[in-house]
Image 1 (tube, rainbow, N blue to C red):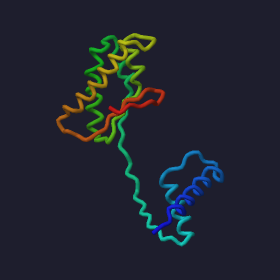
Image 2: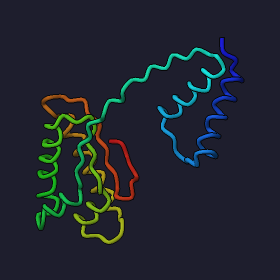
Image 3: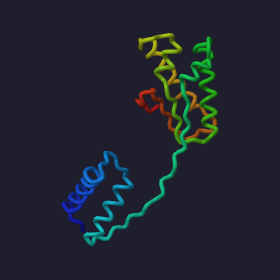
Image 4: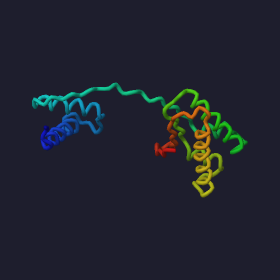
Length: 158
């Protein structure tokens, strides 16, 4: 049995080490775990730390603003079929995640708006719903996560 107070103190010391001694503001879980295991072993505690190799995530990414530009003067009539084709192309690469960036700027471009309006919000919702619909009607029924993000890195899971 481990003393919870000992583990808490060791974890605090490891965090202090990374923050103060190393000057880091970010530490990966793997890096923290390794350091924690090393210190606990120093106290004579047997630590069985299996390090599983992290599986790389296959992420497909598309820029919605570029798709809107490619749609030209066809606006939404040309945009939605182009969006469906882009989603199909991404899904054919067997990703775990498909990320569509630039939703806000795409919507403003399609709507011809300089500022975000109620019409922009409605069009944004239509795009998100359309992506959900296309994925739910995918004949291969793939398990994939859709993400939509603005250029300022705000993300919304679909």
